[in-house]
Image (cartoon, rainbow, N blue to C red; front, side, top):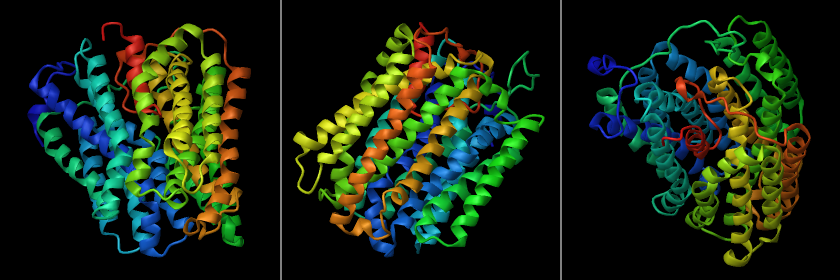
Length: 508
């Protein structure tokens, strides 16, 4: 390990310096591979199922095994970085992620692939919080907002290109290359990080008066992840019935209750219940669960629908969904600034409703559907709703807590968003009667898709109702949390991180 890097003065890097640019490159590569792990897989699912002769449950677990460990352990990953060194944990997570990605690419069967995806999520939970924490801890305060903006912008480009590159690889050398795509930047990241990134740790300090400083809560992290795993297993396997699914569901409830008990009575919980005493914070997280459950189910099923029913190639399906991400990259920052002037109620009521309308418009998409007349309008409406919704959601979240607790609040909200998508992917096929072989029949999948879209659209509508009933009409003052490095800071959409620093840092 390069000890000269660890000895560098804290929070002194400049974006224009060589070392600053190398540090930005390392953090962009690290966070980028996690985004690729989330975005490239959906377009490969039909090919994975065909190669392994697998049912729908395998496709669900290919997505959910990754999201499960990432959502369940991301708060713990941030705490590990603060405790043992952010660069050290970031590098360990990157190496772990690369090794797991290689295992995914070489998986001889579906069970190995699912296990490797879960290991990928563990690596992502270790490196993702550290990528932003390294920037906040290493860069000079005057350059920090610009550094975070560059990190978010390049990461957003990576997120947009993920499905496109994944589809190109699936149609070319095959789906296994989508996992090798993540391995290369991860391996390039490690020597850059070891040579150029300064080491930093979280300074030990007592919690401020009324503060909710997150801690090193291993038991809470394990119980939370286990409860999610059991619930996901119960929902995925419930189609077959039997005592195993029922036992898993009961166990999920019991483990979930144990998790809440540990968080309530533990001396230093990672998710202290006291933070939910803020009505606005609680409301924002409920809205997040509704919206990200709906959108998680939508994107999972739409990537399959475009290939199975419409007849697109994997590349075509990935390219078809680019407009949604492009809209968010272009307009989310402006939407967040507008939300600060108008208050949270209007955008967080209107945005989910517009998203739901876009989902319902996908009901017109069937075999041979026209992209400009039927598919593109639905995705543009969906993207417009996300623009109106996503950035104001983050602004409202961060204004609902004290500045000292902004990192904790963002981490909880990120975990809620990922868990919501995880549960949606597990539950939707069960709720709409999608059989294990539905993805092999365009007629069966069309029927199930038609039943699923109203459910997906209904979830954001519930979020809109919660926003209208629980959020204030006028904006409250933001917590301005950018003065301290938060090792666990993560908002659900990458662009929201850029938005927050633009709207709270006039010198950007």
